[in-house]
Length: 371
Image (cartoon, rainbow, N blue to C red; front, side, top):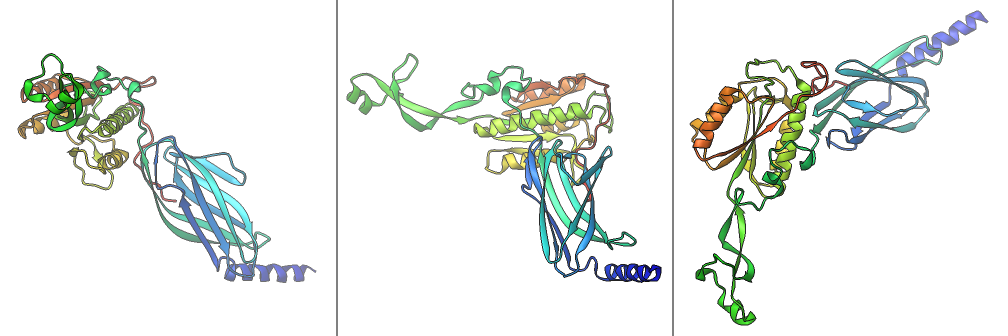
């Protein structure tokens, strides 16, 4: 009997070593390729066995960023580190069978994420031997920074963005006529619409539309202090500033204001240069700004003073600058005055201090995970 058991065990080991993982296919997809912070999506796994030999057990392992949080599920083990989490699941697969599994994920931090591989291990029914096979995924996920409502932002004056009809932002366009209105004190005789006046019996003037006069440049400063060097000391505070920046940009673009971005960090997958995206109102501008801020590396390239000095050297005029910063250092205020002397408008948005220990490191938002 012992010899028979040993022979059967040896045969099982030989069969499963030779054919166990042959005919096994695995794929993983996301239900969305682009998503905002704190939104959820499904990760869909499809595993198939295209042979007669059943698989009594399979173990699937992958490494994923901790920013992708799993919901509660059976047969799923997740062990977390500071940056990555190990995702392990166990199952069995019958002959000529395909199974589809869905995992609900919540994206808690912006970033460009890459899931490249997954490892599957299988073996004989007795668990005496096992073999592993690695699957290539090349899966990408882009998580945009969260867009906040305008009332949630620490604007110096909410009417600055909340009322886009103020003269600081728009001027009357003499070529854009949107109807007629009653004559008011201050209107000139040249603006009178004589046909409408004759038709209504009262003095009517052309109702002219408005067109954007100023362009907006949002300046995100990753420095927590003017004396700071390369390393970001308060990453969570800068993350809040990133949300402020994309929120203002989205609101301004939706209301027809040409908007750009200036930042002294750099972007994952691009040259290690500061960010400068010129103001534009074209259809893809918001997506480009969101994608840029999603991949922003929290590492200072140059000082914000240097970036604004370059704006002065370019002779930029008729631009509205919004400076989102943790500080208002003397050198920064000095270069702001130079911008104002050129005929630009400058407003400040202060990033408030957050509760907790200053300088506490957070998981890097830009790290991609290999799965």
